[in-house]
Amino acid sequence: MSFLEVREVVKRFGANEVLRGINLSVEEHQVVCLIGPSGCGKSTLLRCINGLEEIQSGEIRLHGDRISGPGVDLNALRREVGIVFQSFNLFPHMTVLQNITLAPTQVLRVPEEEARERAMALLRRIGLEHKAQAYPDQLSGGQQQRVAIVRALAMEPMLLLLDEITSALDPELVSEVLNLLRELAEEGMTMLLATHEMGFAKEVADKVCFLYGGVVHEEGPPEEIFKNPKSERTQQFLRSIIEAGRL
Image 1 (cartoon, rainbow, N blue to C red):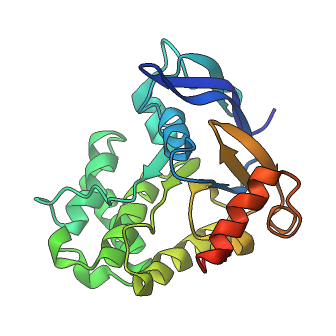
Image 2: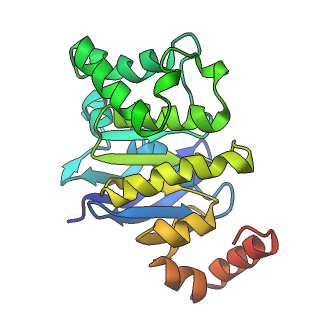
């Protein structure tokens, strides 16, 4: 069994079936990129894996343990599965340091001093140690997003989910965030990310999954998906991306 297994997962919002029996697997230390048009279910899938959305049927397993359906300990799940959103979601009334230490101290019961030391080490790594006492609105978008990633890393998750984390950033700030993800990939962090950054997916992903109509329509190594897609739907999507100058 794979590190992460998504099997026949269905998710509806009222009459709208967003995920229609989706199947997906991620191996440990793998980087898997989800690509596809807006509304294809990428963000919903990530939210289901993290337990932010309940699924109607199917099953999600992490390391063989079921993490979907009744009886799942969501707090335990979120200790192992971190998620970063495109809108940063930092607490505006807390400093950068407080944002990063909150969950480790409150959820993991890490002593305050240890949590601070870990947070400062993470901030040094991304070159933002000098911003520890700043508030989110005093940071650029790229800085806020890097802090949001570091906040997730402070929980030492087994799996990191990233939902279109560069889509709200100005183009010149995107590279700051992607460079951090490259480092994490090189260190073996298991990541599943929804992205419109095709160049990044091509360079860093071990596997690319094209979602369409609530299912994984095609998947494979990036060179196969981008250079020789088998499905007409995948070909159409990539043509539109090329025409838009994003690949």
